[in-house]
Image 1 (cartoon, rainbow, N blue to C red):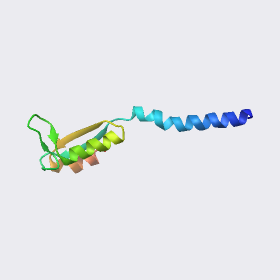
Image 2: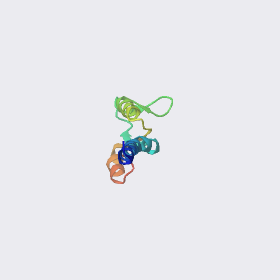
Image 3: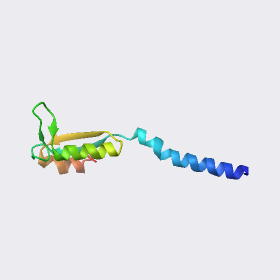
Image 4: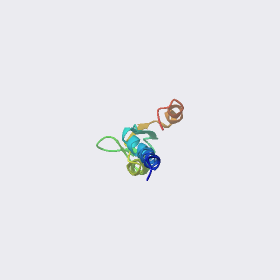
Length: 88
């Protein structure tokens, strides 16, 4: 192999490794839910929220290998929160 071939292979390996290394630095996903809309999202007795949406969002984040932050807010603040960039 010539040095050109070796350099091309090394460059390809580095380009492929870049996205894998960048995943470690991704910020957590941010989402908001209406925390009073049972069974999708509702308050837990011990604090926090639970429900179908919470389970779904948590599973999606797990499969994406990302952390997730779920804010339970009133329905009327969800759209303004998205427009303000508070949620992904």
